[in-house]
Length: 357
Image 1 (cartoon, rainbow, N blue to C red):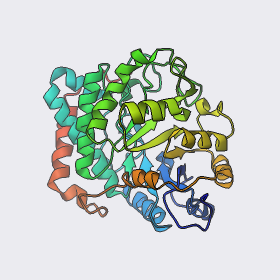
Image 2: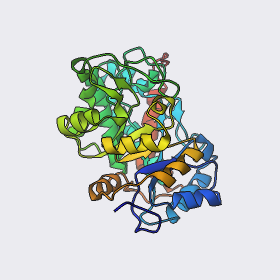
Image 3: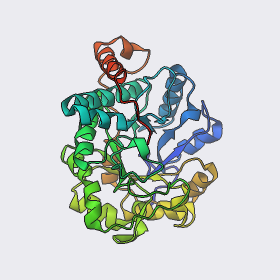
């Protein structure tokens, strides 16, 4: 039976955004819709940690089970919350460190993952869409220094350490952008990237996913990239990629999330409701519709989704499980935070001079 307003609450298959530092009445109503399962926050939703805690608390109070709250907090140029948070290096910084001392780099990646996750959980955020495991093929404008390394083995090693640091803090990892965004020039925010490689060549990009899946990866975010020698559909709308490659071939059992379906690369698939429908049919558990409240409203009006207990379990596994009680600045009084922050700060003082990409 389709999920409709008034049905018993569960985590719906949509993740949407909000406009500012606090919720408006229309946003509260929209977030209470049973098809909504999560909220993604951006820099516009943040002024300082106390405000963020108030916002996340309000979002959680709207319904039970509480909505998932997510953000992109990779570090470098992709760090939405800054004031009162540790300034995190771009992912490539760990890759440069890996080239000098692999063991030390893995240790630092673990500390970086723990620190990022612990600070977010302390502010009431469930997950960061991290780590980025795209290989640095030297082509992508939008990935650049978000990539850990060019070599798949190095990316897998560092991403595993980062994921384990996140897990130790109580946060699930969401690896992105499956199956790989690093070998295309175009930015999927503005145009459709096309990767002309055959599956055998793309297999290198899948190695980090194999590694993380074998160690219990909880989430994967799928790219809006078309790989025509594998499937004509973009990966985020492709059962070939989601069921055939990710689920069956790689054995992934966690939650599948799309990148933002409001991006230009996804627009070719039709109206927002059609994009979301195709993504869910292809095998996604949660579809993101961001920065377009009118589109989100239309999707909520039009979409009909049968209940899926397995989807509920996969999404529930993304909820943060704090090791330290969140809120009030207690985190920074603890030895674990001081140790991770000091290790990262000391290493950053010796960071490679060139981190651009």
